[in-house]
Amino acid sequence: GVSLQGTGADVASSGDTESALMHAERSTAEPPEDNTMKEILDLPWADKPAWLLDLVVITAFSCLMGAASYPYSLVTDKVHEWWLEKTGPENMWDNPANFTFQGGSTKWILIAWLCCTAVGVFKVCIKLDRYPSFIAEMRAMHVDPWMSAKVLVSCIASLCAGATLGLEAG
Image (tube, one colour):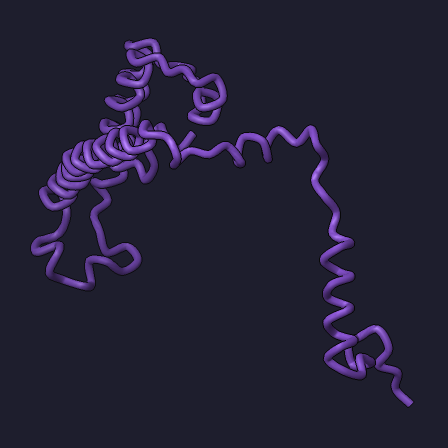
């Protein structure tokens, strides 16, 4: 025969189930007392008046970042769409055949190569050969604003040039 022992099918009554659950609750391991993550997470934050100020500041900052991302996206989309349209086939956006394999223009390869090479030269000119990663800046809790401005301008330039990812991608 098949044994169902240990699968939960061997519990005879609801009283046995309750006692098994009570035993399981008592036997759960307690976190160690020197658990710094638990100490950080257990700090009360909504019982102080300052949390409302934090909420307002974070919400305002989020709205500002969202508003600033709109022109960034608009510029990086419209510039390369403009040169794709000017150098591509007629009625590019209206003809689905233009979006098939080899449906574009061979000029695009040269334009993207030249523009992305120009972005590389631009990075050398502004001394942006190396810059800290986003994660390193988060760990250090410090950002060099001039370096960030250089990265932002270089990201916009590379995306306008037709690169699929900007410098922020690593």
